[in-house]
Image (cartoon, rainbow, N blue to C red; front, side, top):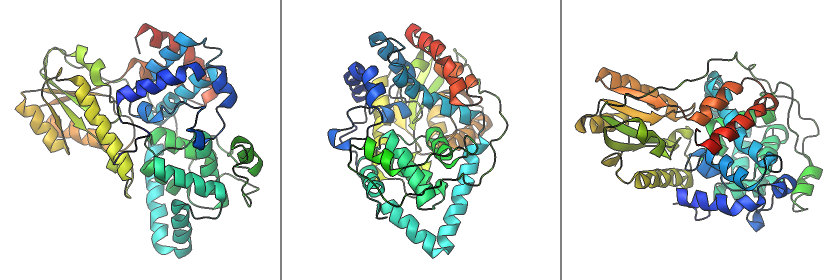
Length: 405
């Protein structure tokens, strides 16, 4: 099932962008922190499910906003858009952090099997039955809609870690299982930031006064942790290389591979002259070792089908693959010698792509991962904190407006 609050189409993403543009300037800067779900979150864009799957792209949003507002007046919203680019670039250069999160999640799940008190507290938190009114309401909203305001996500993470005393990995996992926009980089690094791991020693503390102010008095929770010391964890690893992507052979008969990480595949088509077909391959069920919500799985699958519909046969016959074997058989049946896809970032789709590359090589097929211009500009700057990273915004705006991103 899908929630009709977020129809899984590019058309809907573009309509939301157009509707939000008048508010993307000083209104957003002034009101963005207010969590008002009863009014449909009127002060934020609601674009995150569409951006996460690149049904619309960061570059499209940057170009549209600066066609309506000056970069100065829309700075807060523009920076919010490129936070996603920062998180993704940061994780690409430190992939062991994603692997460490998954290992930490496995350890936390082992504890659930042996510590009855921890399991009971975790189950109550997942059901929204902790007795903390704000937290329980946000868990209910997350479960019902697959969405939370960004400020509410920060509050939930802080209460989960410091007041409830639950492992942060279990909270990050809950978000990945229930958020329509669940993104491995933004989600993992956001939880690590709240916990005091991303910026070592700096945590985010949810306070009753702050919650009351930005929910306009809907909540004033009692008993929140007065002290939020950083959790234990491994230090950030050394900076690794920036992914460069690959150039496809323009003359090779090719299959275009569409994944949930980039559901606007049209930009790949001019790079090859001989297309033999298109294959959709999604991995929403791999976002967690536990059951991913039916809403997340349905949204991702329907969004993928929308991407194939928009290709409109331009790349040839279109199929949906459940595994690498089906995909490779489709390539061979079409006479393709090359599989071309947008770059697959760290997350559940990455090991699938790596396994596909090895299997394809054994059959004499090449896999080419192409990196978007936006990522090529942004990711090299994701070397430290966001304050330094945001200096790349003028270059990203120029590229977006010129169509080079």
